[in-house]
Image 1 (tube, rainbow, N blue to C red):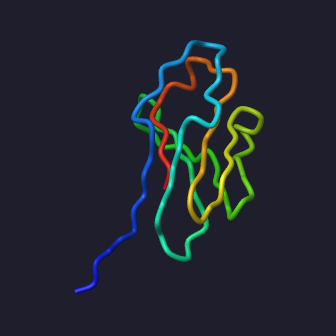
Image 2: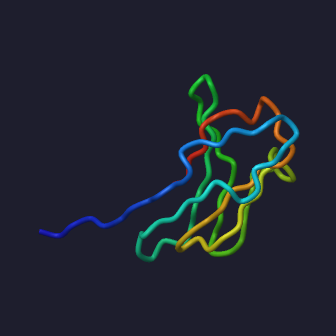
Length: 99
């Protein structure tokens, strides 16, 4: 039978920073999904709610309005993307997912 080789990889497993510092292109996502050129980013908070942060379409980032200037991402939607978060606060604590 056919095998499913669609895979999404994300690194690193965790990042520890101080308030006021930034995460500069340190959250990485890559995928091997044929003919797919979008990478979406979500954040899960302590209440387990998932929030869409935005997405990268081909090479164009589209952050959600409420995170513009705070969250940014760059890369190529058909292969990989890096997420950055500036001027960290306690509200930025959570689990970040790409899809």
